[in-house]
Image 1 (cartoon, one colour):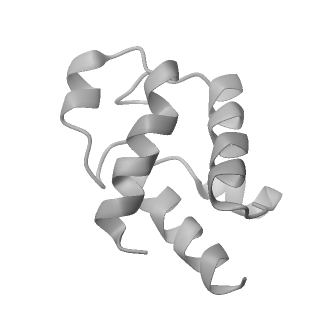
Image 2 (tube, rainbow, N blue to C red):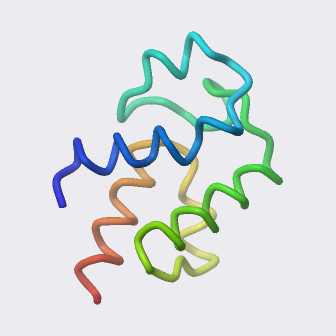
Length: 84
């Protein structure tokens, strides 16, 4: 799966949780979930669960702690997909 496809998928997943529409419209690999999109930590857990469902992967606690930006989320998703 290409990074661009993952970004498109991530946009659909995070959309219900965002607090900053303008930052969402400019979402890129550099976007930070908490600082840019104003997503709180509880919703970040929801996003991780949604990502697990979307890709049929399991994200361990260590990976969850690193999943704070779009880039890190894509990296983790790619690694987990390769392990399938």
